[in-house]
Amino acid sequence: MKLARFNDHRLGLLQGEVLTDVTAALAHLPSARYPFPRHDIFIEHLPFLQPFIEECAQNGQTHALQDVSLLSPVANVGKVVAAPVNYQRHMEEVLAQRDIHHGNLIHEIHKAGLFLKASSSVIGAGHAIELVHTDRRNDHEVELAVVIGKAGRGVQLQEALSHVAGYCIGLDITLRGPEERSLRKSPDTYTVLGPYLVTADELGDPGALDLSLHVGDELRQQANTRELILGVAELIVFASSFYTLHPGDVLITGTPQGVGPIVAGDTLHARIQGIGAMSVRVAAAA
Image (cartoon, rainbow, N blue to C red; front, side, top):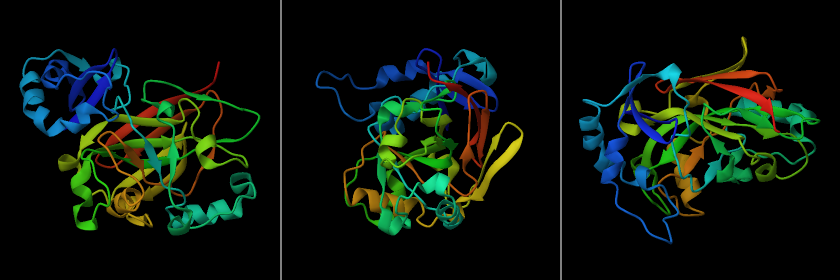
C-alpha cells in the first residue's frame, strides 16, 4: 500500500496517480483519552486497518495527486532518530570541507552513534522548508526514512525488519555551524517526510534502492542504499539498544555524498526507487 495524508488531515490510498480518500477507515481506530498515547495509533494499528482501507477505496472520492497538499505520512512522530555519516563517501566529503564540519570531531557511525531531531521539525511535501539563520549555510540531505510499526527494545537483527511499518523519503535539512547536530537540525520544517508511506510488504528489500536529489535542474546527490555502512536492520538494532522504539518513530538512515547549500527560492526534487518522488519548496522563515 501507498498511504498519504493530505489537505485537512485526510487519509488517502494511492493507486497510480490517483489518490482515493479512505478517511472513513480511521473510524475503526480505538478511542483514546488523556493522557494520550505518545506514539502514533494509526501506524500501530495499520495491519488491522488495511482491510477497512481497501473496502473504503472501492467508492471513496478520488483526487489527482497534483491537486492535493501532502502532509507528513506520520501524524504523530514520537522521535526522529538520525544516522550521521552512514555513507563512506559522505564521511570523506565532510572531513574534506570545513564549511561542513566546522572543526567538530567527525567519526564513522560506529563511534559517532545516533542523534535525535525534534518531532516539531517534521513537515510533509506540501509545506515549504523555511530556512533560519540564513547568514549561515543551510544544506540539503536526502535519506531513506524508516517508519517503525511495532514497539521494540533490544531488537535482534533477525527480527529487526518485522518492526518496520513502511518507508518514505526523508529530507534532513541542516544548518551548518559549531553547535550540536540536534540543535542545528531541529528547526521547524527541517525534517521533510513524504510523499507518502509505502508499506514494508510493498517495498520489499530496503537495501538496494537508488536515491537522488536535484536542486532545480542540478543533480546534487545520487547513491544506492546498498552503500549504507549500517543498513536498516542494523540501525534498528543499534537504536533499540539505547531506547525503546515506538510505532510512529522515524529512523532516517543517513545521507550520501553531494550535500550542498540551499537558499530561499530553490526547489528540491527527491526520489527513491520503489517509493516515488517529491518536490519541496525552500523559503525563508517569516
